Length: 412
Ligand code: CP
Image 1 (cartoon, rainbow, N blue to C red):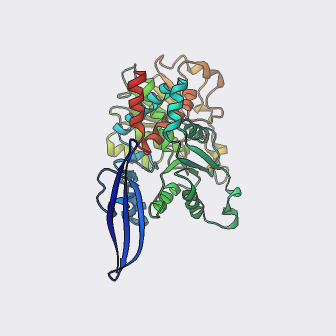
Image 2 (cartoon, helix red, strand yellow):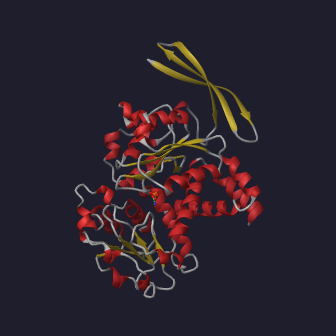
């Protein structure tokens, strides 16, 4: 039998952190077989070896049991010390966490307006490195995460093309990503296979070197950080217009394969009284799983293909492009999407207080002349994306209280 005994040696307190030094001795049949010294930072509630190595609740569940859970039950497995550790699905967020992230994002962007503030931010996570593994194309998500890392001092590295990794030599994607965890403190990943980021988070949580995994877009199913930046944009836009509650939001375009809408529909459902309209050609209409989720939560919604008549009714229009990269036989080529385009003449029907959103990239679904209308928010979404990702990373590494202290002392 192998036993491990923990013998506290001493406690060293510094201004920055409380650290503890322990000797860990392994015993076999009553005889010591090896000793290691463990130096660690004291975390609240740490009282035993089991606690010290309690890295993630994902350790406590087998993959088959975990993957079969309903999405809303998975969220607790992504927590550590009651805060998001892995960020994988929109369903793991509740309203207080979303609003706290928005507050950190807004405070951080204000701090960043001065050189002194930028210097302070640069120091927050100077000791961390992040791998941005993007196995699908991206402009905004990649660059906003890259910039977010730079703002708070994290050193980013990238693999953007699996053909440059040892996957071409037959290495499994799982082994490739596990290799990243040997060198980096966080993995931010986009992958064409739905659920792959969850698989990686589970795998890494069951190794000796778990690191946080952020899903930067997976398959056709989830884009949780896009949903965070979208809800941040909605909350900011309606801050002085009675808030988000009770508003009408229209999702337009390819709702069957648009992962941004699928994630955002869940976050919006956390706000009582918001009615969701899904406006799409029938083959591209929102899928049943989202409608079942809305039914369970008692959220009002409507499905239609009549875009024109809803334009004057709604408070936000969330446009999306056709996601034809998922076509298997050019099937969306035969669908007429022009009735789902927003044109200049529509603007006079739109409420003066309404907003127009788009996750981008766009094709022809929003005329470029609309960009200069004050209701067009999609370029603001791009910028909001960087700040909410800064906030998210700070929150994962539990550094957000330093933002509060700096903000309250020097800004507010
Ligand atoms: N919105 C979004 O995910 O854009 P990219 O594909 O350019 O990252």
